[in-house]
Length: 342
Image 1 (cartoon, one colour):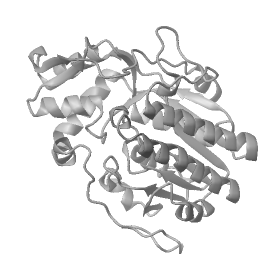
Image 2 (cartoon, rainbow, N blue to C red; image 1 turned 60 degrees about the horizontal axis):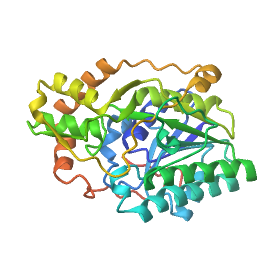
Image 3 (cartoon, helix red, strand yellow; image 1 turned 90 degrees about the horizontal axis):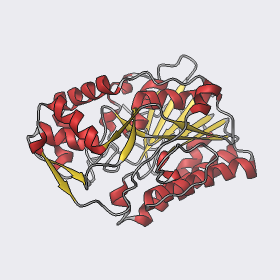
Image 4 (cartoon, rainbow, N blue to C red; image 1 turned 120 degrees about the vertical axis):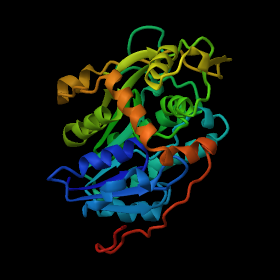
């Protein structure tokens, strides 16, 4: 498992994972495959390009020829690449199905052909659907309510089917809501923060009663590395352990940190299919792999706000055109071993 292909590695969670795995002495090569759509930015990798173990390839996970050539040269795949925004999925269902389901199938096909040693598929707690009480375990049924969650549930099943049918060593992780630096401002925490930093109002759906578990991105990446190294093929691991907050409580925390008051908050009608509460039981990964989250939400939010305050050049253009395609860097597939980006 010395050569790792990371799809979606220029995105929010993927770039944090890449920087983490590059520090491992037993990892000889890390290749990032990313389409650099609106939510993926090569700048997210930043100083990681100083590490000679990193190669970047600009391409799409549905490009079967490209994917086959890359998988053939690696021993493990960590699959982050996905369309991931609920609201956009309402008007772009085909795009979500293509990237999330067909992209996963394309990667799994290549992994099957080339005898990959480990395939970690990254998913979400949203596949379990809303829970009024209790917490979902890995064996609970999938009840997604929106196209995004349905596409992720389908991709989970596709990936797991390749283990059961062909023996591909697939592991699936399902995490709760991630937060931290580098996140695109379409997501609620960076959206609220970037608006408050510009003295603009923020909006809460309905009464702000929707409950989410907030997990620092670095804790999630630590869990993913544990699964990459020691997860049982064919199994799923829930990754949680952050803090449960209503959207109103979250807004209150961010108002306090940003020095704003409740006059900055406007309530708007709830969006369609806005699941009231997500909750997962993450006992399995704690007991089997020793996972323990280490980031306190209060400190994590302060550090996250500070990053956005110090890096307006990274998010201000996106705040004005949040779904626009950003400039991309064209890098050919590294077919010869000597080819690399930067």
